[in-house]
Image (tube, rainbow, N blue to C red; front, side, top):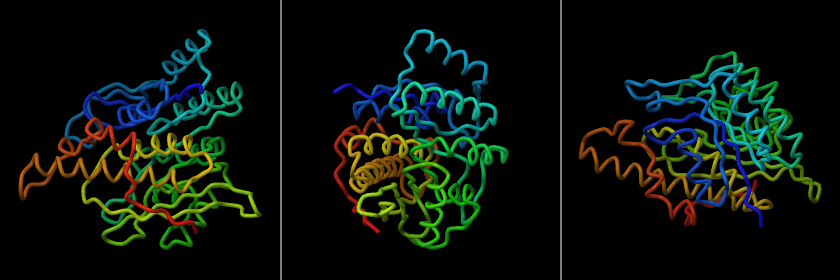
Length: 306
């Protein structure tokens, strides 16, 4: 069986695991060939006190893409996108993905619409607000798999999510925009100690329009960066490996995440010592140490069909 090839357009850091540093290694372990374009190259992620680096502009990404095209090496099975903070760059990515879909109509575009998150009960965008309509009107309509968090799903549907019914309504609205698979990677509906994720896939079998799934996972009390990038990459991999079983795919994704985050938190706690708070540098994801969990995750969560 021919190996699938992924084009991943995301950020890159020299130190730590966010963007392509978080996504490429797990995809390779799970058998995918990955070509990647670094939309930015920073010393470290921007949660640190200091960071420096370069941002790829539209002319530069076009130069890379056009040269690959001249070499006739742009047949991809998947495109994966993540953090982007420039409107013109986002639109250039849309142009590229549309052309790749013309070349391979079976191409699957996995979009993590990285725009913001919730801290201390308050949602906050960390990209310019001008990107929201571009995501809504240009990016989401060509996406096949969409992985917003709760705050991003609220932004994209212009509605609040305070209970499960509202979460499923939000997912239905996102389906209507285009994607056949929508996964809200995490929500605060689980209370103090848990997070709840929701997955939904178009399914016209037996007259059932959507296969919808709920996943409850333990809340690991730490501020991890790069976990969303890891989630999207794992979802790409496991939905490919289990194309007809969203339930088991999500169980493997979340179980892998739980193992990695717990290992990361335990290592950070050991590193800083009793009574001290771990910093971002202490909490960089332990991906290398989690190789076995990525390849063969032991299931520790069970999804529920709704």
